[in-house]
Length: 134
Image (cartoon, rainbow, N blue to C red; front, side):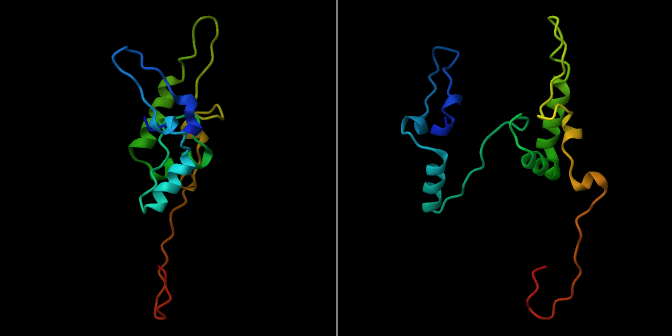
């Protein structure tokens, strides 16, 4: 599995005896930063960090980028957040569960300018000088 040394705590033993999880990056003691440097040195693309779309450890900027992009990832994160809401009920302790660290529903916790009616401005600037970047 592609877990690097800096995330060794994610290593798990398989739940069935006929599967053996292997962690070649950890075995070779390779960190993510080493892997990124190696990829850059060889002119290869740097893959994004992997995580579930609904990972509760995403930071504020990640949530905002995901919401602005819209699409299936944002929809899945919101759906999972809504489904888990009442899973903390029972056994005498009733509490609600939330993906976002604020303890609010994801749709309320993550605010982007578009939520307030902002739109991307299109600049209609004539370009005669040859120095335009529009």
